[in-house]
Length: 443
Ligand code: UD1
Image 1 (tube, protein in one colour):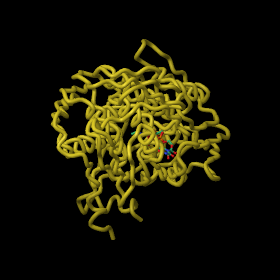
Image 2: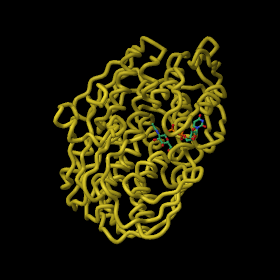
Image 3: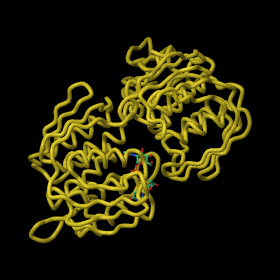
Image 4: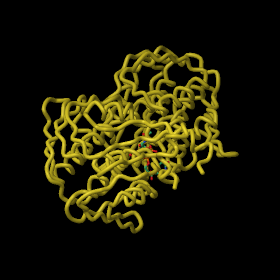
């Protein structure tokens, strides 16, 4: 019998092995938009963000900001933000626990208000994800930080309540910690230097956004970022970069279905590692104009993949490439070095006939001639994309459950795939008739 909760469930039904064709429009980058939204707390004037993707994670960040007293108005892909009156310095637990990126408000809140309380975000499906590097960075800038009852309490002593510039070496080039420190440093007294900084495109986007408000930041995109604190920031109108992970996912969709598709807009340097791996696997990726890519399919052959901080191969593309390598001739070794628990999609891919063996953080993938459609469960955001990709290539019908993961980070994925010709639809398992026809999903 299906429980009441399961009855409410929506699944993605994919009839595989349809050839895709056409152009897909890539939305704004989720991870950039989330950081920029946190960064808007630094400014007491109007901020306008354009090209914001429609995602559950973005809605949650909007709720976090609203709970702090920020005025927000969304129209299409434009978000107007005014953080003149931050009524509260404490971010609500219910919201922070649902969205790790909302912890990133700690830096701007501390810089603006001189004090804040933000709940620890906790672990998530892909790993423990501590925040020690964020905390140590803020401490180096003069903040008094204590962790009590699951919350990080941070305050800046002294009459001006301002952080002080510092030289900070990160033990690991953490994206979030680099963002937290960079945002906090924009309003600090003096100069902050972040060494071994993360170099991801989202760091550059955040730096550009802050600079568009008058911040003084040099070196974003390299491993050394220098921030000279300013008194205050002013209003801005800013366009979020295209989502490199969404773009990479669609390139894999073309490769795995042996389809010719194009993508626009894309910044090719942002996905250079994924393009290089795709070329090693077989398909051609052609840069047609500065912002358009075309994928020409070809037979797939095995290759090895190791996830690394940017400009290395992104951990956020690992699951999708694993799906592709299950159908590539030969043996591939996939090594996940960024997160300790990011191979949970393996069991689901195996249910579709993939031949994968895991030891620690390494997966050995032996290419098989075909996958067969099956009911599968998404375990995290990028795993859900990997299952959709596998379903597009598999023989027969695949039912992907756990769509709350997918909806966190892919803007209209099935609409975009349908436009390319995929046979994919959301099915609400609410009616008795449908429940019976999909009973295998929960068996
Ligand atoms: C961001 C991205 C996520 C991506 C990841 C790595 C957002 C919203 N999310 O996550 O999609 O997969 O970068 O590219 O931008 N770590 C510590 N201590 C810290 C911080 C991090 O040990 O204080 C560890 C983490 O546990 C992890 C590694 O560093 O093992 C990388 O994490 P980090 O780069 O911080 O990722 P996020 O910013 O959380």
